[in-house]
Amino acid sequence: MNKIKIILASIIVVLIVFVTILIYMKPKKSNNVEATKKTTETVLQVENYNVLRRVYSGQISLDSFEDDLRKYATEYMPAILESTKGMDEQQIASYYQENKDTIASQLWIYDSNNFSKMIKYIRDKSKYNLNVKNINIELSDYQEASNFANFKVYFNIGNDESIVFAVKLKIKYSQKEKITFIPVTEE
Image: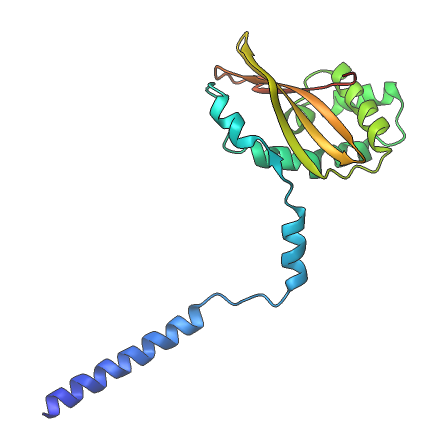
């Protein structure tokens, strides 16, 4: 009988220790509702991303493409707009030459002419106040030809205005220029 009492007491002590450990290891809830709300608000919708994943038959991984588009809208375009504020075309061309590797990796633009067109285009559309509301991958004209999948991406900035890029996405994997963005200045 004493052995049973000792075993039961041991089990109870172990359970108490286990429950105590679980309580202290449990992640703490944030009381900051405002931070949670702000985080939820800043996630831009990327429309037709899953449709693109289904129709694209190439070798380039699209796993991070949705997040890359969000960064493009919320970080890269605003930063480049701010960095080139007040510059004329010649200064923009010089800026491109000095920063072409970063521009290529973040903005997927590989020549000075398209970079200058993009800066002018975004300035004209946004009036230096770039605030993208949502992103739409437009696949109505989607086609795969000459080792590229071609489609458009619309960055909606409100008031029925969008910044539009023609996108060329490589079909066969290569180290160079997997994705190219070209500003669509006329539609």
